Image (cartoon, rainbow over all chains, first blue to last red):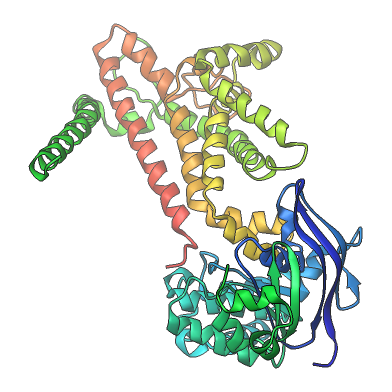
Length: 253
Length: 282
């Protein structure tokens, strides 16, 4: 943990007149895995999506405060959303590969961001990304087959490969394993563990065991407020706040 | 309800739907049977390759009308399909959120009203708009009338198709740093391509059999007509003229022309479908 990948200051978030995040302050250290936990509707997904401005798509969504990625204030007027999203990749709750071939899925980010000058470079990036996502050996003989023919877990790893192909600094994962069976979930967790050496990963999860297993740091949210944030071991063994303890011991949520 | 009652209800409903299916298919096959039986007799090489014979003489063909129909359809497609698709994209993609939301609603409503306008009225409108200032009937006037008729069909059908593209695809592309335009071009239009071709086909099918608007715009011609500023022959107007004429030979030719028209439309659909499959990942 050498630097700060992202920092959020006094972040408030509104859907129309309804406020869903209240004065969130948080620093995301470089590399490692930060988990957001908390009951449904606590705002953890909203906060995650404010880090690559995916909330912009929702009419009436509004943020106040400051979100910095690296040293860039991403909500500054005139901020470049496109280059932001190149730096901050995202994996969604439901795997969403394009209805194209496996190779084209991984190649899409390379294409739109012009990361490869020739075919060989592109193919090398595709292979490296699929290897990073632990999918290469399973798909190397059928790169030109449709991505939608893969299993659910493979599709999700393909989405991770697709996000990795543009070499983001930060990878946001919004409950990436919630639609997968335990074996596929374990593979995603293993993968996150490997990737944290090279990327900063922020993962939203409903699954407390998952947060305890994979993350280095954990932030606990309740009703739009960041209650407590710290080393995962400390959060799960001796939380400072009563709300955190109640949540992780299953007393509510 | 006990099981036996439910089973018999199931059986009754199944039978009902089967009867309805057959009831819909019977007229279709009767029409096809009638057209083929009537048309096959008059179908010969001369019909497909020769110009019409002067009234009263036997023989001759409708080659110019076949070419004319293809020209009219081609021009109408060039005018109507891109515009129809553009309207579909506008109402499906840009009409959500922002201030231009309301305009999309107006456009959609306009398209619906346009669908309901009788085609002969569209023909009259183009007659006043194009034929009167040009002082003559012309192929281009016919094509404009046909394009206006197909426009709302293509725009509404393509809007429906575009709406079916999952939102998750767009999110995935945006999250990779794609601009809105790239998302539309690379993801939305591409995954909707077969459906968009169907939408265009629906429009073509809608106009391929139109006669009334052509009577007021392209009129007819007994000559080869490659110039779009001249009156243009078409199979539908030819069929109409021959069918109401008092000559048995012409009646036979009208039936054969009807068969030819149907065959052309079927062929066109098959080609378009094959084109839709190109580039599909399998």
